[in-house]
Image (cartoon, rainbow, N blue to C red; front, side, top):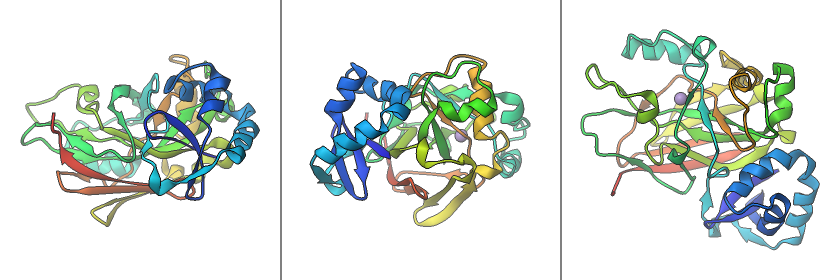
Length: 287
Ligand code: MN
């Protein structure tokens, strides 16, 4: 199943190019308002897929082209991110910045402010930091289902509600300007998410997930979860031993090689086969 949010505070099931509004069903099921209902839904999703399918059957369909999609998880409690998690990306970053020594194997995770999340219809807004470099990192994202506390890698997949795409937009350090990583990656719209949540029942083997990213029509990133240094079950397991992972938490798995600079006027397109694509314009922030 593909779940979306749309038109501000609506929740839908996406079938082909049609959105079926299941907002009332989700709010009743979770007892929570939007957007918190989406987090709670992730925790009970596995037991309620049939209920949602029926609600979608009974809801009229609206063409996807007539709605404005939002991020599928608009307000994750935690937005975890793997640092260097592809060997080829580590190699390219060591070329640029000498201190890129560790990988996710050693470094664990970092977090981005969840307020950096934006939707697949929103532009990437670059703040006014002249002479700083901003990069795209197209990443496969895990969405946590039922709470994961101290789970083993073997148990981890039972705690994943599904998958989505997140762009980990990043302001790079310079020799003299070395803000915290959280600061440089947490500007609003620096975590565009979408276009949907693909539920994990449709992803029996997450190592088969792949992601591509194009900048202005040119393929820049082409990756497979098979090449992750720390794989998806181990990312979830290890983080779950640090703190309980909550329903709707998002964990972005790390950027493949091909990271490159973006600027106003660019268009960034990312796609995961079977999940969908999002294409985002890059603009200068107007506020
Ligand atoms: Mn990243």
